[in-house]
Length: 144
Image (cartoon, rainbow, N blue to C red; front, side):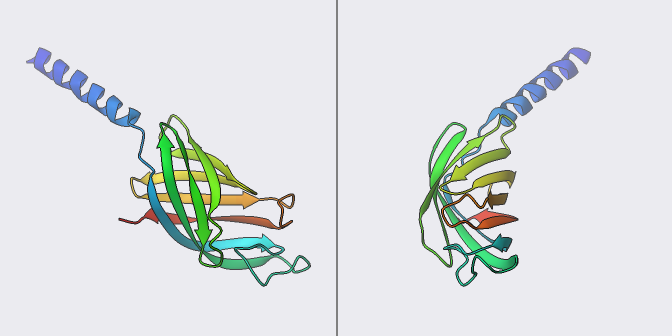
């Protein structure tokens, strides 16, 4: 009886380890709404000038993850304000939940919360082409 219990425990541990090693598939269309703080203007935040005080804005973003090779993923992003189709590149850490990435003017920090749900944080600094500064975190879900 002890032998059977030991075998079952080893099999369960091996199955759990394999499940943790499975790299999540990120491909598809992700969308979400949230708030960001912005200094200056940007295509995704029209009507804010560079001389304005910091402004809290609502944003609705769409991320199209077009491809994935293991822990690397790429695609294009747009907002309800600007259909920029801005390219991005992401890299996932070995925990299969943490992602970092960049687009043409900023950086991503993403945490996968479930197979179709993530928290996306995004920043860009005043050295970006628009000279704006942006920071925000919000939830995104994959459309089915």
